[in-house]
Image (cartoon, rainbow, N blue to C red; front, side, top):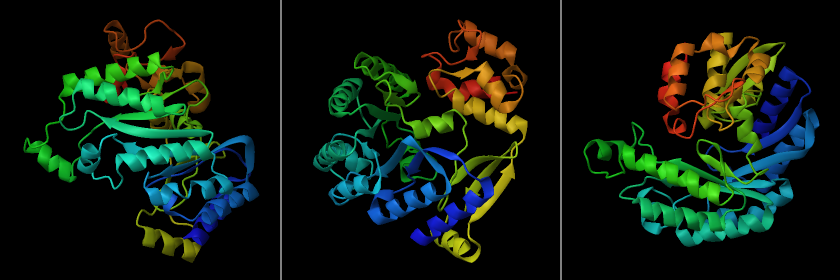
Length: 349
């Protein structure tokens, strides 16, 4: 597996040439189960092919089990300088209901250890959980803010088709908060985080100034990124053309392909200006700063008005869902951000 990761880095380096790297992210499942020496070898191979910025952000997703947390020292030595913990809840009943393998005691210990070894860290929580009241979420959020070290990811529980939760939900056996209560929880989340100097910079992400996730900002700003490993997606520009890449998802299929031909790229499609524009709008409107018209035109080569229903956009401004005060950008208001998907459906042409 480690050899295959290095081979795929070699392949993409040949494909795109020398670039500068501002972030590296080990994610997608449980990368903290890897040996730290694998992380070190991946970082070394990237530095061999590319120019790594002096202030590069190198993040690792980790589960807060005691086994994985005990490896944080080794990961720090390998080059990781930011960790993101999948905490999800701060009570054992809800952790069990969510199917998590860790308990609250382990979660708190993992947060403590992560802050010992990494200057920058994040952990996530899910709200609007089963039978959760707004006062319970308020108490948990304030506890989280007291524990946090500059960044929090706070997601509303969503029930996806094909999961055990979906069947229970459709049968009325899963009493999650309704839309109105969930909306109040979202508003409360934004207000409390802002009061604690953790303003929202994206729909579900909150950070002190300068502590924003640079890697995730690359997605939301629609910058280039390489997707290495099983199931990884990428967006890369070559000779003025942008391509969407996708690696084989099944690990054994991915591994065989890399060993056989040096990479496991299942899809490499050139994106049309229309698709690029839609993706940029979908990603950029997640940010509280929105999309500057000049930045859009620089990336797409055309004005953003050519890809949006301007009459509909003006109506949404009049209703308070889209910012109507700035003529050089488009961004959703606090009221509009929870309705991003519905708004996209109305404004994209």
